[in-house]
Image (cartoon, rainbow, N blue to C red; front, side, top):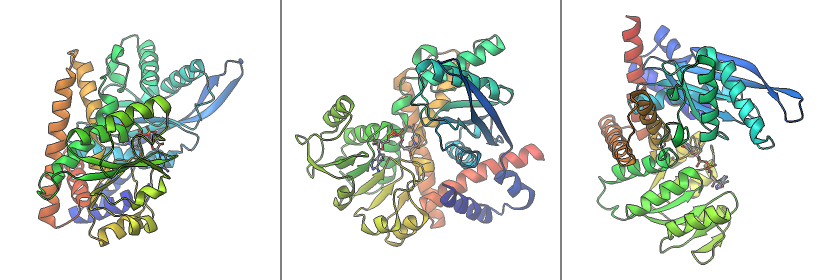
Length: 407
Ligand code: NAD
């Protein structure tokens, strides 16, 4: 993931005149903790895994970021993701800095009891640098609301006080928001609508979506509610195409029931790659990082690319798209609805006042729309890309706060 983020941040530093000690301060991670995390297996044997928490920058507030359990987790990867969180929180004007954590483990073979013990041991190892006003973890790859509930419980047993604001993404019964799972897709749809809202020729845009998981499904649902036509959808195994527009509600129901997209009653079943030949106004990658290679970027038939996934373009792929006059709506803006709703959850936990889902949706929609408009205005004023504009806003806000603290 380093390339696009590193190069855009270094270009942004140049544009904002950030160099010397401030540049150093904003580039380096402030604190990193690595610990061996012990796990007592159901057999009684104890095994150890590498656990990390990387805190990039806290100029705007406590660190915030997810916790991933995956065998490929390294400190380096988490450092890049922690930086991305700093810029994402800043762009959305949230009072948070950026962090990321995780364990280098494949949790799939573990029993529920083993995953619980591992999550709670991880929390205890990271305890010295976590806290509701210090660093607030959330879920990420292979962790979920159950994991967050276990972590909140471990923190509270350690301190002797129930503090639901130590993590976000918890079960509703422990102070979480039921809307959190929908939030990223919903927020992405609001950004798309705000950006296309200014283009009269895009009255009923058509879309092709890669990836039909949490983000892809909720995004497709919200876009179709807004009158967008979804012509093609893929998952890792197949694609489904309907030039008249897919019945998204039914497709989501069948995908959840069966686990696949192989439903010929709703459209033509093709391979994932074959959906690239579908011509649609929007191509929306919502699956893997780096999925748009230069060859693919040359072949895509679309008017916009919407980065619902994190880092879905290769740097060369992005250059080709921009060269073909296809603007990119950047991940830092498009998929930031999740962390925004995590902020609402944290506020709810701190105030003790329950937030109505209706209000959460309205607040999210208003915030995503106004930030998308700010990014568009900035891009137009500077004659730059949406990504450049988003980073100029995000990095500038952190730089101002950092300078104010050190004055
Ligand atoms: P998910 O695991 O729920 O869904 C991923 C989907 O991608 C699945 O449908 C899977 O089958 C599909 N997929 C995998 N390989 C594919 C391929 N080669 N071709 C087509 N489809 C393929 O994950 P998610 O939570 O929806 O996250 C998707 C992306 O959004 C990731 O990049 C993630 O980092 C990013 N993101 C997610 C959130 C969130 O709140 N979930 C927030 C910000 C960013």
